[in-house]
Length: 169
Ligand code: FES
Image (cartoon, rainbow, N blue to C red; front, side, top):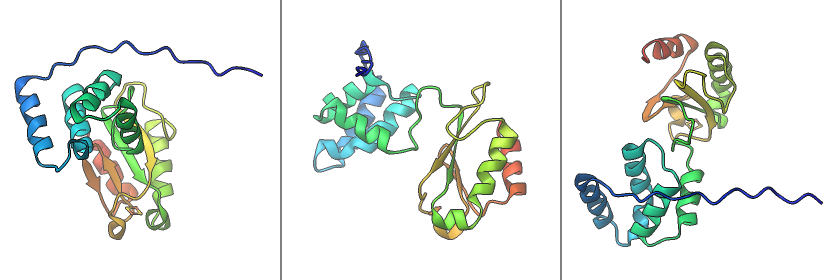
């Protein structure tokens, strides 16, 4: 039997937030009855600050909110909208749940793969785009939809999709 390959334990760097970011973190936490309820806004804050939330940032959040780093990791990896290492400048998330599927999300995915020269889950070599299929983006009545970073694009057609991509610098 082959043993699983163990990943080396990452060396954590010490995170010190700038005073204004630290103040924002405290403001966020103060809005919730318990600190751990501020998990998602804290992840967004750290992503905005550092680009991605790495192990060091997760450890910081865990300590700040009083939860284990693995709890932070499970939240971070559950939500598809958080960027991972290697995610391109533009994260394209195509909803492929039934309402969007019935309205042509598959055509959207195929067009993006062809135009950008990648497959779902990959990034372009220039680091500009990453393509993901995701579950419902809560805009089923405007299907098919695509989220690019924080912006939702609704009622997509291939022509509209090309227009949107042309506008991304
Ligand atoms: S199914 Fe696509 S937004 Fe809900």
